[in-house]
Length: 196
Ligand code: GAR
Image (tube, rainbow, N blue to C red; front, side, top):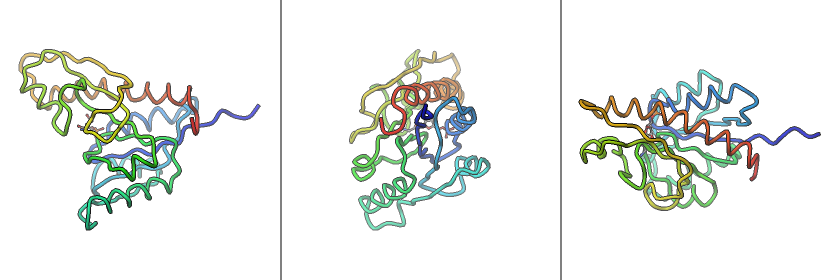
């Protein structure tokens, strides 16, 4: 019997990359069914890229300020991703809006630190805290042309505690977020495999 197809994944990061690390750790088990074939970023000198390098995963950087227009950046990012022939792109703390070139060429999944459709955008944790919600959490969703508007794949709830700061709340959300992301990828690998 032919071996089951493995899901080729490119992960995009802009910062510390703890969600990426959770995927790297999970992917060290061949049974997970996922190969992280590259890690891309919009900036250098970040822990997310260092994590990839420590694990021998190819990296690339496509910096928006180096391109004359946002569209040119989007096209270059799409090409850099395509070079690794992924079945799926995971935006895990990538802090830029992806454009039509990337989204037209790839299936992209994002993880967001709030219970969408509440608190989309770059400050999901801060905005939820400022609103005074008692429960927030994280969302994994498909990326469409809007800002955090695509179809929801999974969510986890996290209670806000008295005295929470943006940092303390975000840390508790990220514990849930990492587990959610690993579970979502495991399900996708099991149900779709490559090219599904
Ligand atoms: C995660 O909480 C992710 O949801 C968030 O950045 C963090 C990255 O953490 N992304 C956004 O806010 C995108 N709007 P990590 O670098 O440690 O994985």
